[in-house]
Length: 209
Image (tube, rainbow, N blue to C red; front, side, top):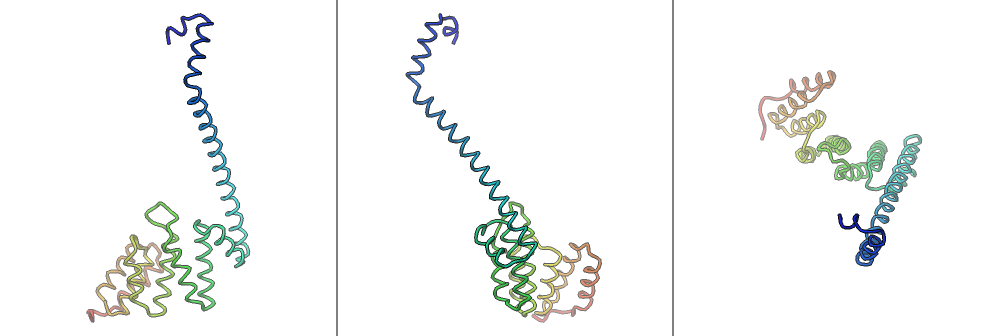
């Protein structure tokens, strides 16, 4: 490098020309790679932002109208995004209220098996499991309730209470008491705590199994 700067202007030009002839293809390829990378990155960011905007706008329309056709459009265009899971939760509720229990379970199962969050606790999955447990409990599928909630990494107060309800119905009073106590431990709602305490007081003393 010192020789380059100490050389005359003509010598510097010859050195640069020799360097260019030797490495021009590498230089051109590198420049093209940088241009393509920058262009691809900008396109991806632009496309991603546009996609997020369109999905958010469509979901806003759905929330304002609860139009089932808009919900179906969201599920079709963005099946793996978080907005679709919100739609599925709403449509599951609608199906349940209309008496279509199988459809409600199908939608909730999809949300339960999705993982649109890197966090250990996914509130959408928790909501889906809670609603599934309520459906199973109402239909006296007590083992399904316990199996569903035993498979959860982290249970909410409502989940523990539902688990306790199922165990109580199966005569597993000791397990039910433990679940209710865990529900109490995780609850901050005074009305819920009072109801859980009543359930504990009403428990039988011995297991039947």
